[in-house]
Amino acid sequence: MDFHLRVMTPGDIPAGMRLKELAGWNQTRGDWERFLAASPAGCFVAEAGSQVVGSVATITYEERFAWIGMVLVDPVTRGRGIGTKLLEQSIKYLDGCQVPSMKLDATPQGKPIYEKLGFKSEYEIERWMLKRPAAPHAAAKAETPELEDALTLDHEVFGADRSGLLRSMACEAPEFVLQARSGGELTGYAFGRRGSRADQLGPWIARDGAAAREMLDEFLRRAFRELIFVDALCDSPWALPLLRARGFEHSRPLTRMFRGRNDFPGRPDLQGAIMGPEFG
Image (cartoon, rainbow, N blue to C red; front, side, top):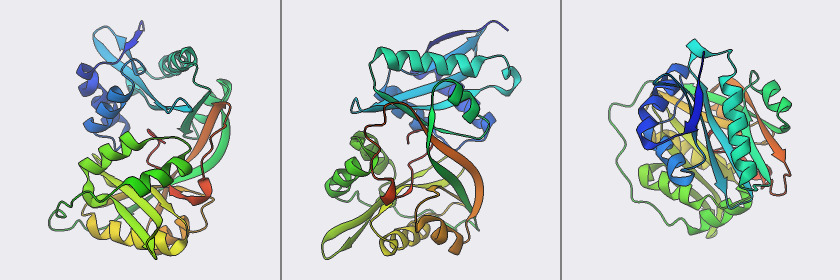
């Protein structure tokens, strides 16, 4: 099959959504728009004839490191090197931008491919899923709380500024912006999204298990979908025990990987869950 790569445009979002649906992923049109707004020259599609058959997206955080996500290939065209070519194109683009580090979250099937491209493992993540009866009506919209304390802590925890992305999430789902405090001090924060398949919690950050539990329970109260996703860090002392206690079940493993220097690893010790494999 002959195919060529080109920069993705907003007009390609329906094609990206088609690929995402074929893969059974949880992203929305808004997620594609976030990528294109943040990195209009750094998202690519593979095109065969007039049809988009693959995609990859990148986003750079504060010139410290970049994220690679949305690596999708039409099942009909898999095994023909399209995904590898898209990855190589994203790496070439980011190298040209002189980004010192690239990160991604790999499935077990993708991990050997990433290793051949120079990526190394950092830590393990697992997707956990809760299936329950859907609530009879949607949760009421909430006002977006003050975010500055959470954004300041997030810079430390994530390792770079992603405040624009978090503000976008807060505007879209203000009811899922959660904060825990003790004596006026911020002890945790969380954001969430209403994905195409499930409500998703993440990032989920806490200084202790009590703060983590408070926010998880409040998220579950505010969510109304039948499915809930959480991409949890395996090394967190509180994330997996809390999820198990509330009926979540293991869905799939992921590996956080990096290429280049890892000068800004953030604070994984405070993370219960990532935002998602597409954004980090």
